[in-house]
Image 1 (cartoon, rainbow, N blue to C red):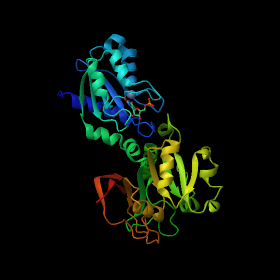
Image 2 (spheres, rainbow, N blue to C red):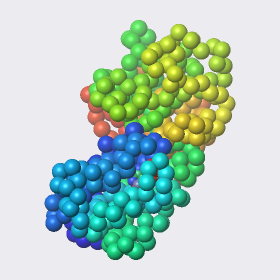
Image 3 (cartoon, rainbow, N blue to C red):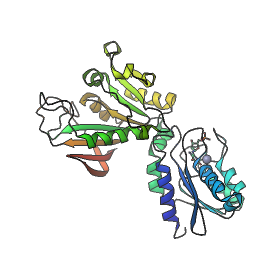
Image 4 (cartoon, rainbow, N blue to C red):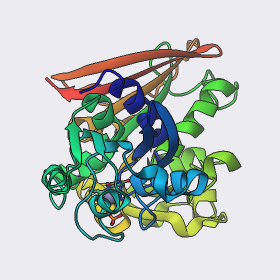
Length: 345
Ligand code: AOF
Ligand code: ZN
């Protein structure tokens, strides 16, 4: 590893982040091409079926500096370059044809079709390979992709918004929003990180939520997230609610509340979903936690004493044995957000 590898890989990860929420079923990936300590070009994977990050970065270099510039360069990429034909040709071939001198990558590809093959293919062609630079940060970037590859289930983020007494309603007569505008803008950004929003029939009946992206900037280059309603009683859903009548109603799905794991597995398998955001009431939240299906918890805490009857996590609350990891806190106006990974202790 060379001294300057870490800052260049950080730059590649920054590129890769632009793809979060847009690339499924592929992972978000970023790449930077460097020669003589200068960045010649950068790129990121924009979506399944489109060129991979390495090819985007090399295309940027060709457009700005011509083919020759790639010869002898170093390519930093956040994921091990792919080595077999998928929707696109293998990146190992592209790197070899371009005549790059060195490839530095961060995370191994959890996709068994590619894992562990790139080093040998590149080295055989005289390209030096360094792996594992900022591997943990790069693994974090592709955590949803990795979960689907390993388990067939999407990465599940549970969002709750609650009063200081852990309730999900305001005092009677005070309107429906617990959290302020700033926190709700963050929820829009959370929806932009995922491929689907999951809710319950109860929430659809009570709140008639839209569960979509409203900011054209967040929507640019991607589709509205799928919306999945989990319910035991489809006949009781209000079919005049926004989920079933708005412009993207064809992206609303209904599934059986009794088998949430199967519903999530189907979302990944049939719709190519890697990450979901769950926005629901306390009962579905409790059953997903109980079933061990939640990977990350985002809790907004509003400075309100609700006194209402509905808790954010119903039943027995958080099941015993869950541990929170990597907790981060942020303020949004008057509200506080806690975001943490949920682990089995
Ligand atoms: C890379 N760079 O930017 C991405 C990679 O069907 P394809 O051809 O798009 O291949 C998808 C697989 O390629 C995906 O499952 C993952 O293993 C890898 N993604 N690889 O070298 C990239 N997005
Ligand atoms: Zn590739």
